Amino acid sequence: MEIPIPPLAEQQCIADCLASLDALIAAQAQKLDALKAHKKGLMQQLFPSVDEVQG
Image (tube, rainbow, N blue to C red):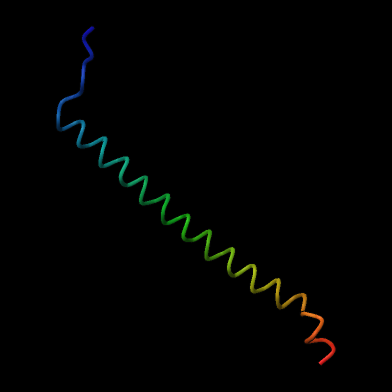
């Protein structure tokens, strides 16, 4: 069975496209982590601990 493969230049273009998508996904994941940390900080300010209220 013969399996056609694209020319090397097209393969490189596909690889570059996929690499840029990987970088975009990684950047969005970092942004999401930062937003989750910010949310956690805001929630902690919104609901103070019992020790802070009594002290």
